[in-house]
Length: 388
Image 1 (tube, one colour):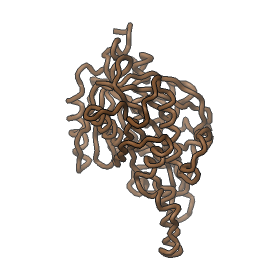
Image 2 (tube, one colour; image 1 turned 180 degrees about the vertical axis):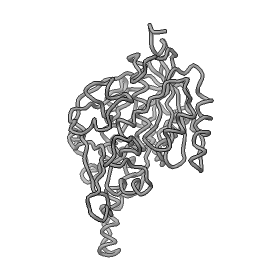
Image 3 (cartoon, one colour; image 1 turned 180 degrees about the horizontal axis):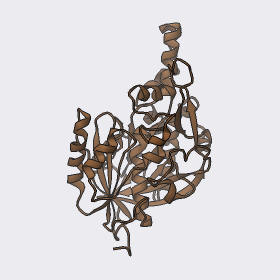
Image 4 (cartoon, helix red, strand yellow; image 1 turned 135 degrees about the vertical axis):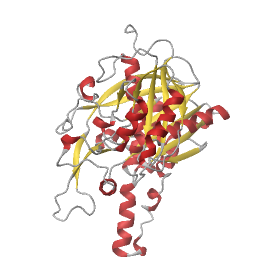
């Protein structure tokens, strides 16, 4: 069962294609929440539904800024209205945005389950990268400004990476194992692999896998200093990434039928950017059999070239981050949505030659040297029926 926050344009084909104008998001306020529902056995079954939400672009002046104070960065934000439906719970009273995103995704995933599993037989795996940076920045800002005696005991618990997982487990009543996996843009692959291993090696009925990220000026400034962000004065170049936020949750359990996760490969780390294409190529070689198309993680950085070199020109390659932004920890789930949507609809955005194979490759490469991939397939039909 999956519930993923993802920007979707008024026209799915036009918005999720490589032809989208970089300025498409300016002024857009009617986008869509995408849900992908997965039940896992040897693979993962999935169905898809959607409902309207509002996601907007917002400019932030990052910490430090520029000398003239006019440096602004574009980000993709999730409005507070998206989590307004959450039930009242003590854990959510002071929770940061990332915990609220996670709660919305996790609750939605369980609510969509045809047969909700017993909560005492569920494990929780949380994928995260930047973590709760909003409260972390506030916590340390008080210390820097007024000294260690001003450290807030209310903010400190929100600064640790496993805070969102702790909140979610308490809200849902999950008393079993809880794991937080920290990584970069490929961390979703590692979290899904851990969940698969937990189900295979224990008597669990299901594993709830959640990923979430929140955007803060501090995060934007860090990526800007690393020269990863898009120059707001030259958006037409397509160079550099746009930060985004959101969450996704997948309830994995043993079942059959529908769309399934066929195989997960955690990949290997690279220690220089020049090694990225070789590491991705190794993942592709392990998963390439009967693959019809690839949903990649290109985001306007060096990853674009590395991924294209690894995949080559034989497979159609589509990268939703170019339109949706870089959500880091949650991004693999957005790629999974795009792949599942292509399998369901028989339409791959931006491709004039739709693939006919029954498997999709989701390829992940992070900015901090992690890689991974998985294959998604339709059990009973080809990816694009009637087009072979």
